[in-house]
Length: 366
Ligand SMILES: *Cc1c(COP(=O)(O)O)cnc(C)c1O
Image 1 (cartoon, rainbow, N blue to C red):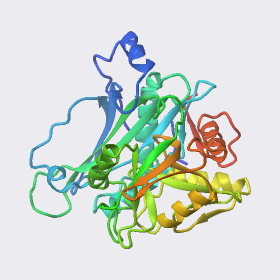
Image 2 (image 1 turned 90 degrees about the horizontal axis):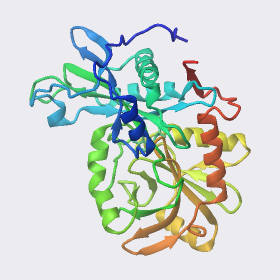
Image 3 (image 1 turned 180 degrees about the horizontal axis):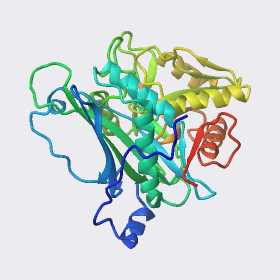
Image 4 (image 1 turned 180 degrees about the vertical axis):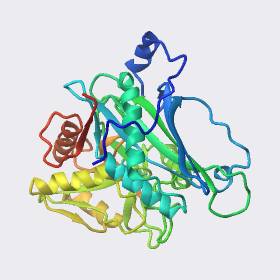
């Protein structure tokens, strides 16, 4: 355990922060990813110096040369985690060391320098405390932290960059879906896949999202909320959504989620749900699940519930699945009991309202 009181990212305060009254207005209904705080954490890496120049400064544009490598070859990775306001007035981070580890794994896959976990954690903790007044009140309110790193070397040759910029943004967010957790509808992408064996599917990189957008746009055109991807080799096995993992709940009480075979992003929410469910004595299989089986089980009633999960949207019930061959619904098309129970258990842990035998909630600040 590193000393949390030590400052690793010295603060240069924003000379003209948003006045409190204007901040309060923005926090009434922040939506997702549009309201940003006054500061950002920043660090640089170069071949010669390694990690250096850590600081927290006023949030603002970054100067970038048009030949910066990221703009051409997309060498970029990111993370997403939330800082919560706890009932005792403190601030909590949920399993941030898992994000720190995943950030290092993503960096390795993208031939980028690994940010030491202590620096990742310090940047998130220190920025969260500086910006604690930006955490919206109320259920679903949180400060969404977006650590990311990109290749900043000015060079058009194809090789790993010799310079990188690491930044953490903080964004005040409300519930991802307005009105709690309505169920979402999915479009099964048949033309596009998200990740191939040996590719970058298990790294959290911007390129995966760039590749998924055309499928997401197709889903919207088809009247669905989200796209669900099948595996690239057989176009049969359910993998995940564009940015959320998926779980299935059966009539015998058991659950299933696709296994981490390299083409699925290892979600921290996925891992938390697995452990919560197993701890409650629920049998959860990590097994492949075919799209044909999914439809057959939904039609026979063997499949009772399905939900998507991730940091941004937490746990989201899936009500309906469509493809060029037609549609089927899951259960009664609304949120299932198990889905809601698991979501509530998880949210209570994240907000410090439940006993935390796992030690998942990290309290920062009093
Ligand atoms: C981030 C992400 C998830 C969810 O991961 P969490 O750690 O639970 O937020 C799932 N799928 C993809 C593709 C992602 O990028």
